[in-house]
Length: 180
Image (cartoon, rainbow, N blue to C red; front, side):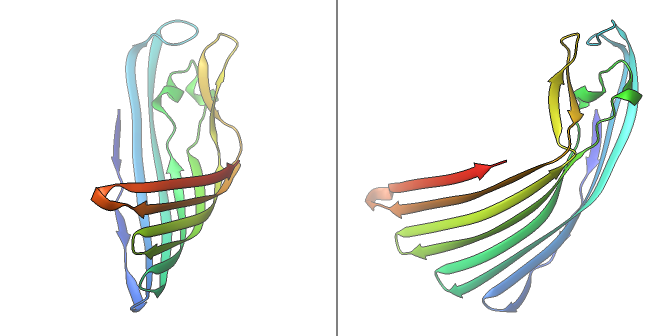
């Protein structure tokens, strides 16, 4: 099982009527535990599996939004992320030799939103850096397992537009280009 708590705080600061800056922070505390007298999914047969692991991280974030006009806004965002390993990572013969650490990420995004009556357009560019990427493999006994495999960077552009038609209908188009 697990027990978790994730308190956070954020603050909206408006230095002008057209600028909003929102800094914040979240604290993650995730207690993952297993107490199984008999675990049958192990390669060398049934045996007890017991562990308790607590994962913690402080995650800052920041968003800034500027509205050059009433129908147009430009924004930038920064955030850190934290992915706890799957509890299945601990169903192994030797927990000490199969240490999977949380995946972490740092996210950057800039974008814009424009509205002109029935037409709305938005677009953004993003960059996400991952460390301790969790990947799944299969061992010599054909048992799947997950492990950390370094890092990765994801980047891309996303564009979309919509046009409101009569009677509640609308046309919508989306385009994205993503790479890793």
